[in-house]
Structures are given as C-alpha cells and as structure tokens.
Image (cartoon, rainbow, N blue to C red):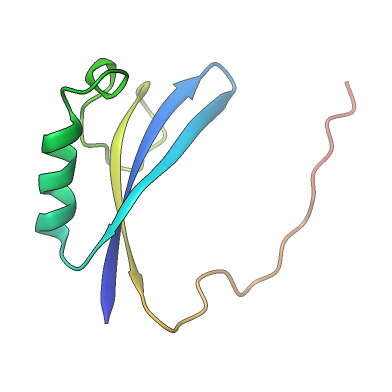
Length: 83
C-alpha cells in the first residue's frame, strides 16, 4: 500500500520550515488538499507545488511512501558546524 504525504516547505536563508499537512491515500487527494490550502494565510505566500529540486523559496511538496517498509535504513551521521 502506498500513501502520499503533503508537506509545506518555506525556505528561510540557510534553513527551512517544513510542515506535514496530511497523509492521503492517493496523489490526487494530496493535490486537492494543496489547492484547498493555497489561499490560506502563509500558504498563499508560497502556494506552488514543488518538485524536490531544492530551488525556490517554498511551496507544497508531495512524497509517496510504501506502508510497512523501512524508509531510512542506511543509518546516519551527525555533522557539526565548527564556526
């Protein structure tokens, strides 16, 4: 089973404010939600549906995930900023 997560991303200089809007059973339902929210305060300033290319200043983003499957199985490292 696949689900579709709708995120809103607002890029801030070197950081980003990422909000999980909802989890939907189809891509179309996630897109419909982005249309419903696009005129709301804050979202209206960054309403575009983004491709995850890291460019632009924000908007809605849809990610698909398979249920009952590890999504991040490689482990991780922590980077420090030694300014």
